[in-house]
Length: 148
Image 1 (cartoon, rainbow, N blue to C red):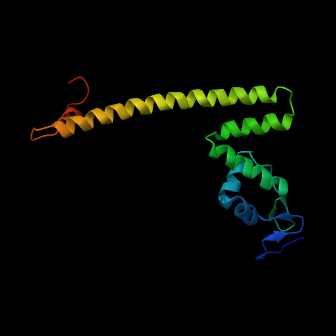
Image 2 (image 1 turned 45 degrees about the horizontal axis):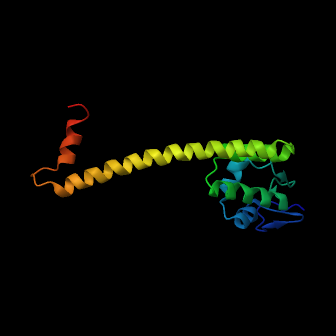
Image 3 (image 1 turned 60 degrees about the vertical axis):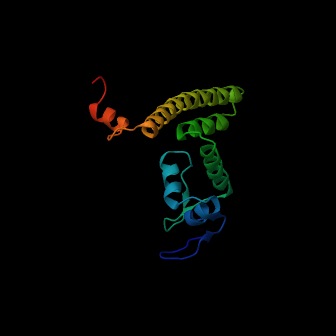
């Protein structure tokens, strides 16, 4: 079905426009275009007048991408998961496990960094609260810089 230039219809025969897909998946149209450019989504078929047309499989793919991002996976991770799944390889699960193990290692490093940062902030807070000088010792340390 050809919507024709300027048509306000949101559904097309046997599919959805980009606006309908975006609404169904709670993302923006720009997000859909971005995922297409990054090849996370297959290129949409087009009507004669150039409108993108998406199917139910695109809704499922987009929802998968969003759920994967929601649990902390990167777009690179998502791309790899899609590639592995589409390959129907007997090693799919092992490769997914490797990808998840790597993501856990990255998170563990980040948690350690944040824990150190929190400790530093807590120590500086105690110094501020205990200070009786006219100037805050934390500000004075920051003004001096490291090693001074």
